[in-house]
Image 1 (tube, one colour):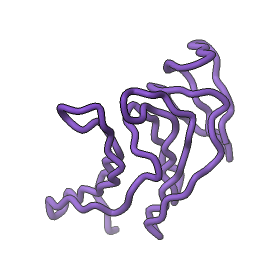
Image 2: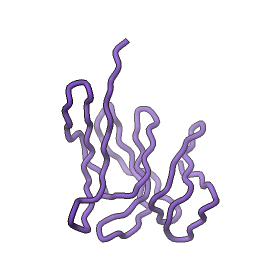
Image 3: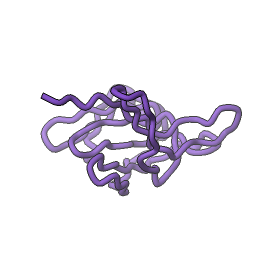
Length: 123
């Protein structure tokens, strides 16, 4: 059985600035290489990610200058394309995601109309 040992590094803060990264990087542990495989539609940090084949969902987070966003997107690891998906109802950063069936759920975090105890269906 062939095992693909890799990790995706998505967005983040750019050191010594208030700017965020839009890079989607893939690090291959087998050969020790890191390649840029795509770009986020909106640069962000403090976002949540969740892998649900073939997509990596990127939800909420902070934009430049720590402005919290409700935008969401997904990256297709097969086609290497990024597309916008439905926004959160409220801006949120530092959230967690989980999935059950065909739905994603977000919980925790900070943002407008913040409810730290509730779980909200997302997609």
